[in-house]
Image (tube, rainbow, N blue to C red; front, side, top):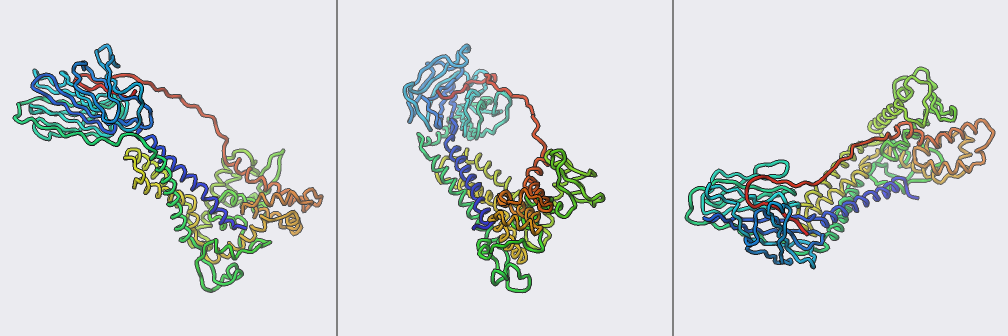
Length: 586
C-alpha cells in the first residue's frame, strides 16, 4: 500500500501536468494568433521635388495571420486616380480598383488591392507609389506630411519613414498622433535633405506626422535607404510544434525541480533495522533517506505513537498545517474536557467548560460567550481559527521534529513568480518572430514549470530529524491501520475507551472516510450502553466537524452589482498635412 507521501507526490503531478498543458496551449495560441492581423513593417519615403508634387513610395508587409482575406485597402486623402504610379505585390494578387472611400464627401478615394475571388493568409508585401501635392508647400517653404495616417485599424510593429528633399530641412518636428493624444518622436537628419524616423510598436489608430521648414537648395540629392527584405509569405503549422515544445519544456522544468526538491528534502534517519529507525532516539549513525525508501520500514500499527498528539501527527505527516489538523486539535480539546460538542435545537454548538480561560485560540473563539453555534459565519470563531493556525505553525517551526520546516513561504513566493514569468513570456513571445525552437519560449517555460513544481512540492524541503522520522514511520503505520479498518476495530476502540482519540487521529490523517465506513458498519451504533453511546455520538459530531468548521469561518457570498461598460467606434483625425489616411484588409 502506498504511503501518504507517495500518494501526495503522485497527486501533485496532476496540477503540474495541467499547468504544462496550460503553458502549451498559451504558447501555441500566441503563435497561432500571432500576428493578430497586423503590419510587420511599414516602410515609406516621400521624395520632394522642385515642383509642388511629391512622390510617395510605400512598402507594407501585411500579416493576415490565420484570417482569410482577399487583400488590403488604402485610403489616401487628396489622392487622384491619375496620381497613382504603381501598385504591386510579389506574393499576393495585386489587381486594384478605386472607389469612394471612408471620407467620401471630402473626395477621399479608397484603393482596394486584391482579387475578390482569391483569399490569402499569412505575410504578404504590398508596394505602392503615388504622387501628392499636399505634402510640401514650396511657396511658404513648409513640409507637413502625415507619413502614417491614423486610419490604420491594425498595429504596426516597425515603421521606417524617410524624407528626401532637394532643400535643407530645418526646425524639424516629429509627432506620434492619435485620436486622443500625441507624443514626440525622434527624427534623424542623415544628411542635408535626408530625414529618417524609425518607430517600433504603433498601436491601431496611431499615426506619424513630420513637419519642417524648407531652406536652401542642396547640390547633391541624397538617396533613401532601401526597404528591408520581405518576410516569408504564407502560413504553416508551426504553432502546433511550439505548443508541444512548451508542454515538454514545462514538464522538464517541473521534473528538474521535483528531483532537486526530493534530493534536498531527504529526511534524517537512524541507521539500523526498522525498529531502531522508528524508536531509537539515542546515539547512532544518521543517514539521509527519501520517504520512498523510508516506506519500506513502515509496518501496520494498531495504535498511535506515544509523545505526539493527533493534530501534531497530521502536521508531521503533511509537513504543513491544514484544516484537518486544526479540526483534530478542536476535537482533542473536547476529549480533554475543555469544551463540549453538543446539539442545541438541532444546531451543533461548542460549549465552553472553563469559566476562566487564559488568552489563546479558544479564548478568542468564545469571546466571553458560553457557547458558539457552528454552521454559520462567526467572526470571533474565524479570528480564533486564524490564531490557531499561527500557533500550530510556530509549533512546527520550533519543534525538534524538523531541522527545516518553513516551506510554505517558499510556495507563496513561487506562485506569483511563476505567473509573472508566464505573463512576461507571453507578451514577449507575442512580439517576437515565430520560431519552433525559440530560445526564450523554451527557457521561460522551463522556468515556469520549475516554479509550478515548487508551488506544489515545496513541502519536500521540510527535513525531519531522526526523532521526527521515527515518529513518521510509526504514524504512517497507524494511518495504514485506519485506512484498512473494519467495524470490529471501531468496536474494539470503543470498548477500550479509544474511539474518540482514534476518531481525532482519523480526521487529522485524512482517513476519516475509511474510519466512518467502519463506524457505520458497527453493530454497536445503536447500542443502549451509555459509555459507548456517548463515544459514538462524539464520533458522529466529529465526522461532520470539518463541514461545520468551514461554514463557521467563511461568510456567505454576498451579491454584488456593477455598472456595465460601453464601447463604440468613431472616426477622427488631425488637421493639416498631406498624405495619411489609413487602411486595412478586406
